[in-house]
Image 1 (tube, rainbow, N blue to C red):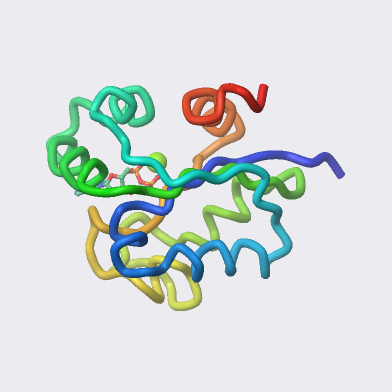
Image 2 (cartoon, helix red, strand yellow):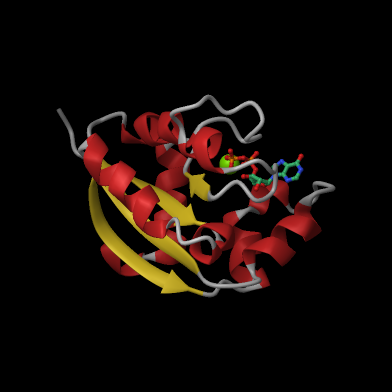
Length: 138
Ligand code: IDP
Ligand code: MG
C-alpha cells in the first residue's frame, strides 16, 4: 500500500487547553507517523490561503479571530493510502455536538468554531495545504 500524507492543525484551543499531546498521541496510537511539526502563530494572510474556500462565509471573521489568537501546532502526518480519511474519522464531525464519542471532537470539544483540530479533506487539499505550511517537504 502507498504511503500518503495529510495535514493537521492543533488549533489554538488545543494548545490553550493542553491537548496537543493528547491529539498527537491519538494519531500515533492509531499507527500514523508525524513527519513534520511546528508550533506557529498564524497570520490572517496565511489563513486566507489555507481557508480559501471559506473566506466569504459568514463565520469566517470569527474563524480568523480564533485561529490567530494564539499559537497552533501545524503537522504533517503520514499513513496508508487513505490516511486523509483515517484522520478525518478520528477528528469527528465539524460540529462537536454531532461528533461521536471516541473521536477527538466528540470526546473533547463542544463548540462549532473551537473544535480543536483541522485535517485535510482530500488528497488534493493535503498537497495544497502542505505546500502552504511546509514548502520544503516537496
Ligand atoms: P472541517 O474543519 O471539519 O473541515 P470546514 O467546513 O472546513 O470544517 O470549516 C472549517 C472550520 O471553520 C471548522 O473546523 C470550524 O472551526 C469553522 N466552522 C465551520 N462551519 C462553521 C459554522 O457554521 N460556524 C462557526 N464556525 C464554523
Ligand atoms: Mg475543512
